[in-house]
Length: 124
Image 1 (cartoon, one colour):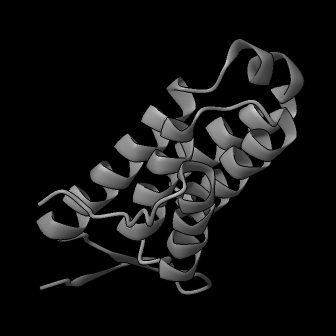
Image 2: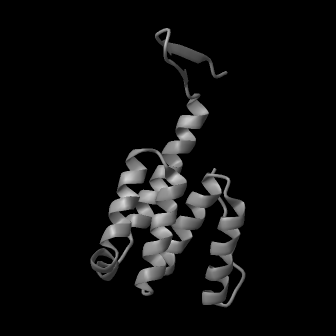
């Protein structure tokens, strides 16, 4: 169960919620998918997408995983030469975050590229 911790003075008050073990595991899993996808970007993407990659890394440090995924997608699209493994990992990250419409959009792109129905399944 999450319990709020109240901090602050008379003029300011901050509520911090302690994350559960399950939530922390979920964050680590999502972060792993994002980092793995990032590691599969080509050297061309590294050169062409420097701004997107820098924004990805900044947002990942801030635990802004959805925005980090936005930046990976931008780099993937801008490069135009990335392998399907990057898209597979992006779909896993989207599924891990509960972004199912986005996961299905990635699955559709993979299905069209491969010529057979691809469906992302999170490992248990």
